[in-house]
Amino acid sequence: MKLLLINIKELLQVREPAPAKLSGTDMRTLPTIQNAWLLLNNKVIEDYGTMDHPPVGNFSQIIDCTGRLVLPTWCDSHSHIVFAGNREQEFVDRINGLSYQEIAEKGGGILNSAQKLQETSEKELFDQSALRLEEVMYQGTGALEIKSGYGLTPEAELKMLRVAKKLAKKFPIAIKTTFLGAHALPTKYKNDKDGYLDLICEEMLPQVAAEGLADYIDIFCEEGYFSVADTHRILTEGKKYSLIPKIHVNQFNAIGGVAAGVEHKALSVDHLELITDQDIEALKGSDTMPVALPGCSYFLSIPYTPGRRIIDAGLPLALATDFNPGSSPSGNMNFVVATACIKMKLTPEEAINAATLNGAYAMGLEKTHGSITRGKAASVIITEEIPSYGYLPYAFGSNCINQVILNGRII
Ligand code: NIG
Ligand code: FE
Image 1 (tube, rainbow, N blue to C red):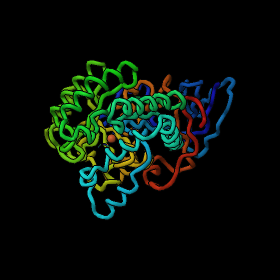
Image 2: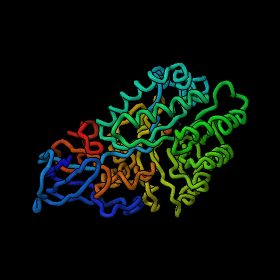
Image 3: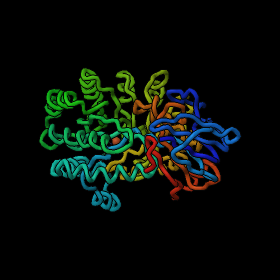
Image 4: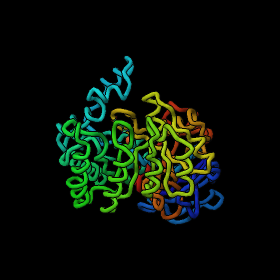
């Protein structure tokens, strides 16, 4: 199956060879080819060039992209897309004056989602999650990381990860999975945090590993949730099963978790709504990707991750949705890219780099996703007829996507 795209007004993010990630001033450049063609051969990008030298041969299908841009699909390296029900009531409670933390202290928040998920069958959980997954695919996401963490019992955590694995089998989107047993303290262990950490280490982790359900290990390192010492323990334990750390850190308080993540060679440190000079220093020279989640800042009205400061310090930055029922009930990467430009003062080039190549790095998919590179996955977005790529974040409320192709399949 050879699919040829012709008359592409501008082909974005063309890199040969593609770097693993982009940092600092390198993020300002977005290489493109104007008036281009792109040839997809089954599941991979075979070749591309300018319309001055069109390819010759037989093609199964030709798509005329006159007036349209083509770019690699978004790489969303942080989501909790497998969840049950919603938290609309808490949304209204927040409008009426309660804070996210106050709601959590009253047994709402993550524990509310955990109760719903525990009461939901695996089949129902799959069906609910599949609807969301299809939605984000149509919104241009071609690679997605999915976390557990709304189970908080061995059975329910495994149920979440099995659902994520089934989604990966059924849909033509690249999926990575993360075990986040240490997301919150379940009510039963309210006064016995170490008991819950024992349960994670002695029961959950061995089963997750035995069934091959996760690539990564995560923990919510935050006041009122898990400490830096807990983070050291969980990441050390996860690494025994070859799970690579990716952590939630600095959402509300900076308590030293970033340095702990870097020390454990975390692939990414995510949230960072607050960041200290020490955090920036810890990240310098490391292979750890800072990940901003502007949808969460928008929805909770908390500070935006100082992405400008992170990039200006010479560091890389990735953007992700954090799609979850409590702090970011949207998996729309187009909105994330726009919000990063509007609220975090990233340029369109920086935001697109952060949402493609750097997102791919933050989920270990930099060799196959995140750029238009020969041999990478045939996963691309064809836009509507728009004036330029800056229009994508500019027209923040418009759907600028005309078609999405995932692994060579038009969806
Ligand atoms: O990444 N901060 C921790 N976990 C999720 C939200 C959890 C929830 O409110 O359900 C996040 O924002
Ligand atoms: Fe999250």
